Image 1 (cartoon, rainbow, N blue to C red):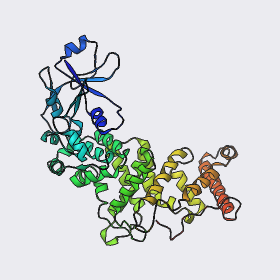
Image 2 (image 1 turned 180 degrees about the vertical axis):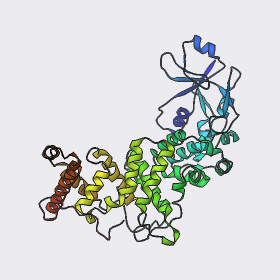
Image 3 (image 1 turned 120 degrees about the vertical axis):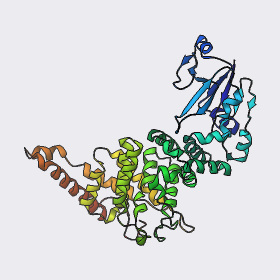
Image 4 (image 1 turned 45 degrees about the vertical axis):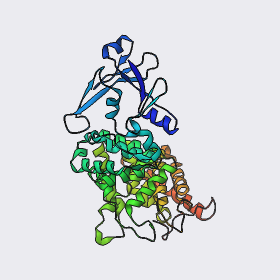
Length: 427
């Protein structure tokens, strides 16, 4: 029996990156021997065990064979005669198909170290095409290793996988798992761009694919295209280290622009209203939790209002807060504001640094929210007696009055003035 460190731990060690999770492959052993040594079985599809002391995972060396469509359509074979090289052959990328012996010797039969040095993401074998999840995994690695390129032959293989319909077998939960991890990488736009290039984006996220080559007014969007704008905004959300709730909302915030008739280009009037139902559909299709869905839908629907805050009447501003459930869950509204900031920053110009322009809308909205929250709701409710159906209206009107007072105080200098979006501001 021989034990080897495999996978990401070896890759990260070779790359000089911090090593986090460590996986082991056991060659020349059996289930019975592992059990006799005190290992605890945990694998459902193939023999994986937990070390009796460290609780780290040890898997028997195995091969796999495709028997049905999709990423679950495999049968596995684990036995003492399966070699380390056979086990590594079934892995996705060469950089993930290296092993290290207990003595520290690097075993690299497929050139993983060479591809690390050349900064290339390359498939190990044509078996890559049997598992559609590997397209998403490669795209996620592209978002992590921002200076790596995809080998041309690997991109061609992924295109063939898409055209053959293999990606159509992916289940929502697995798509969301890979997407959510990719969005949290250093440059998440690369995940989306790789999926776009191989065709997977059009199959899995046609609403995002529809943004490509859709023009916007150059006055406000010097980068021109809606797809590029979304990618720039997404990368800004990563630069700010915003959480997944914000990054996911940014990814979907402009879906409505993909439904604008071409004879109305480059303008996209009412794209917020058209986009919100599309975002909801994407979230339901992926079985995304309510928290992510709600923030993404609110961002799609309200980012225009949040950006144009000074143009809104106090009544409209309070209605925005109420639609965003900001009085009960202000932290979610902060996520919507942060996503709107990314929308503003996600623009590219040779003459303007959009990362440096002011974003006073944040302070403006928090001022209105705090003012509207300051009303004595309990006193209002008690004064209504039995007219319970009038309570929501009374609370709303009190919030509007408080917000209006705060805005007037700001305008007349009683509190610090906040300069916010005028009609000629960037939309």
